[in-house]
Length: 254
Image (cartoon, rainbow, N blue to C red; front, side, top):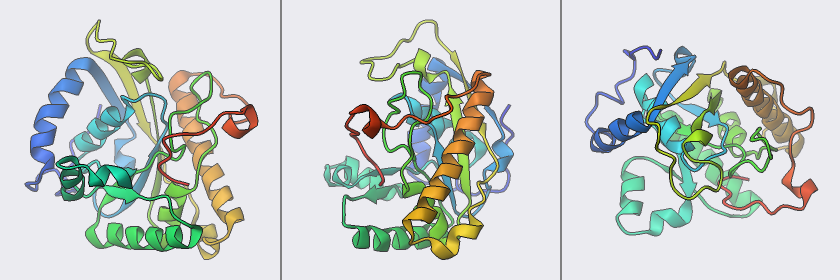
């Protein structure tokens, strides 16, 4: 059961999240019975990078509901092109969502530093799917991760929090069109883990080897949480789309 937050003012402070929550929370709660454990591991104040697993288009609503219940505002990384859409772009900017552009390595590094500094300055958290898209693993285990989440965390020493959720596939399977609504209130379990320690890699944040190591630690932590939820062991080798001739689409980080 998720404890009531008393430390963060994000939920109690008037914002666009209020009308959004008034619509989304009742609808999602009608469709899914979400149980959150480890809520105390998400910082009540200050910046954080929350990294969940991803296997359903419905996942973001589950993650957003869990984060909002804990008392923090659910801000995501989103493709920069979405910010150019009328109304939607305005809404994304006003709620503090973070745009991700496909840029050169040098530009990406500058963008990451700027975004990380803004998270710290405003005491905001961001939700980043480290896989960048829905997992390609046939059994829905986390696949090879990308470095977007760890880049943000390493830039300013922001807590890097792993998250896993399971049960959403019964509501909307991977690549499924439409929702499976009956029976209502399908159980979905969410677990938040201890921050991933990458402090020893901060001095090497610009090195690819350090980014790979930090990403591997993060994906190991997420996978361990999912093993706990599923009560089974993940494959010894993480799925790599490149090794299986699959093209990765819908990337949100690199």
